[in-house]
Image (cartoon, rainbow, N blue to C red):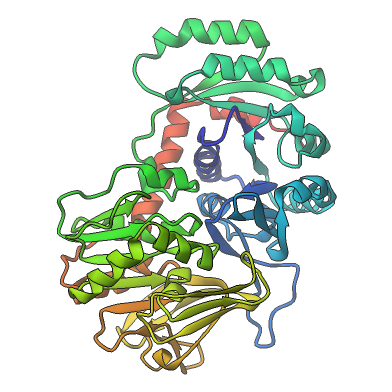
Amino acid sequence: MIQGTASDVGKSMVVAGLCRAFARRGLVVRPFKAQNMSNNAAVAADSDLPPGPDGEIVFGEIGRAQALQARACNAAPSIHMNPVLLKPQTDIGSQVVLRGRVLGNCPARIYHRMRHHMMPAILDSLDRLRAEADLVLVEGAGSGAEVYLRSSDITNMHLAAAADLPVVILSDIDRGGTMAAIVGSHALLDPADRARVVGYVVNKFRGDFSLFEPGVKTITECTGWPFLGVLRWFAHADRLPAEDSLALERPATGEGRGLKVAVPRLSRIANFDDLDPLAAEPGVALRFVQPGHAIPSDTDVIILPGSKATRTDLATLRREGWDIDILAHVRHGGRVVGLCAGYQMLGKVVRDPQGLEGEPGETAGLGLLDIETEIGGEKRLVEIDTIDRRSGCRVTGYEMHMGRTTGPGLSRPWLMLDDGAGNPRPEGAVSADGRVAGAYVHGLFGSDAFRDHWLHAVGAQTSALDFKARTEAAIDALADHCEQNLDLDALLALARR
């Protein structure tokens, strides 16, 4: 198990790098994270349910980080890699997903009391991965030294004890306080949990490490934990999907490039990695517009991303004045694209009669598409790999939503997907002038041919970017980075059955 001294110290990325590094050595490797809190999710095969009536695979959902780690292992993502997923919908509550399926919405205080009941399912999922793999790399959550949570913990030391896992502590020196973080963790843990720690790794180091060697000596003297190595700063981290929305506070990509794309930073933004392929394009300048800032007047395209709470984020648009910016942008001939919840926001109204995403009720949309959405029913979880007949391009991605959209606007679909049986399936909607479009498909811009087609249609520069190959190269570079900075043989020797 890789535990952190805090959130965002690089656990997900380090696990992904180790997954690829050990997989390249011929080992069957699997990632595991008992509980993840993220609105960035991916579809994953649900092996617990039989195939559908036409033999189709049934899907659940897991955290995006575990899907990336599965890719690093050259394995298909599975619901057992992340058995508990929390998707925040309010400041004090989340949608709870257990083994790929939505259990319901739960306030944090109630979930805190009930989560230990999920431990049998968590241990069962971990055992399934152990049975099929040579090596399982378990990612902790936040800090393992939050001892006040120990009695209800399902992701850190409680899990390590229940599953008899050796623990490696990971600290981020770039944020400062590494000595205090590691020594403080040792001081807070009880003797049995301290004994589970087999060593520590310092992450994100820049400069001359010899200057920090006295610090390493002090840490080891204070804790008795072996120093297992230092991972220097990984320059290509921005080429891998970010899990935490903190990444959206970084500077805009591609300043000064041709096509200017603005993305409002919604309060419950979800699956924002949909925009990574556009950000990687040499002819695109993409920026996330932060609260308190207007959408720039020189924007060419506004993209409304996914959200875990559509009506809440419609209120966010209005509170920030972004609705006025968007409507003015359209009046002046600008383009708008909506993805999943962003697509729902472009319609006339969003209804949530059951209160699945917040308080029951309805909220007026932006009125840019002649559609209406009602939140309800089973969550649609579908993997997509087909041809869009309108563009002639292959489209890959997935759907993950609970809303049902109706209205006259659907008679002008954005996409016309082949359903696999030779029949067209209309998807999304486009305004009469073609400048406003939306669809439920996540990952749409990750399809190189479709992205090129769309860029050409909006008058932007296209490129020969192979986004999948770019991501694979970044995973390989991360694995090389782990090989060069850590003694992987020593790490592997610490693992046990």
